[in-house]
Amino acid sequence: MRLANRTAIVTGAGSGFGAGIARRFLEEGAQVMIVDRNGEAAQGVAAEFGGISHTCDVSVGTEVDEMIARAIELMGHVDILVNNAGVSHMPAPLETISEADFDRVLAVNCKSIYLTARALVPHLKTRGAGSILNVSSTAGLSPRPNLNWYNASKGWVNTATETMAIELAPLGIRVNALNPVAGETPLLASFMGEDTPERRAAFLSTIPLGRFSTPQDMANAALYLCSDEASMVTGTCLKVDGGRCI
Figure 1: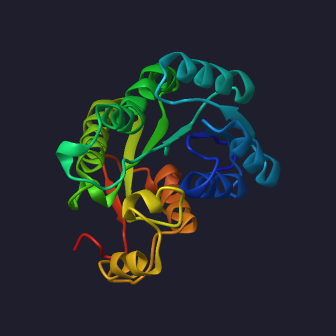
Figure 2: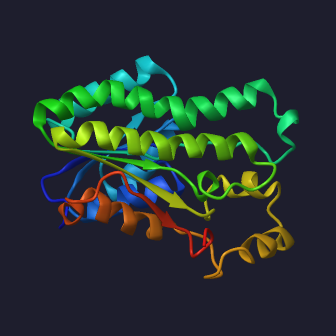
C-alpha cells in the first residue's frame, strides 16, 4: 500500500499504459481519477478496477480546468498527476505531415502538460508537496526516421520535465518522466505504420530484451517515481525500453 491516503489523476487512462498505471495505483491504496477523452473507456476502467471516471480532452484549457476542479472537489486534494495522454501521426517523410496532424500531436503531447500545470501547480504549491509524472518516449531520446514531429514532441516533454523539476523542487514538488519503448497500446499500429507480423519482428529486433513495453512495466516504474521511495528523485527521464536507447 505504497500510495495509501494519496490521490491521483491519470490522463489517457481508458486503455494501454494509462489504464495499467491507474490500476496499479488503485491496488496500492490511492484514490484515482481515471481520465480519458473517450468517456466510455474511462468508465469501463473505473467499473473494473475502481476509481472515478472523468471525460476530458486534455488539449482544451477549459476542460482541463474542470478536470482539476472536479478532482479536488471529489477527492479533497491532489497528490499525484500522471500526464499519460498522447497521440502520434502515421510514419511518413517530415515534409508530408499535414498541419492538422502536427497541431494535434503538439496539442495533446505538449500543450496538455502546460495546461495541467497551469491548473494544478497552484494547488500543489499551497500544499507544499506533490508529484507530476510525464509520459514521454524513447522517440524523444533516440529519434527514428518518419516519426519526425512525434519525436520532437517527446523531446519537448523531456526538456519540460527537467525545467519543471528545477523550478518546483524548492516548493516540495517533484517532476519526472517515463520514456517507454513502444508497447501493446492503441498507438502501436501508428508507430509501425501497420500492425503485421513482419513489422513487429522488425521493431522487436531493435529492442535488446526482445519485447515491447507492457502496461505493467510502466505501472511499476510510475509507482516508484510517484511514491515516497523516490523522494530524492526529480528531473529524471527514466527509460523503460528494454535497452532500446543503449
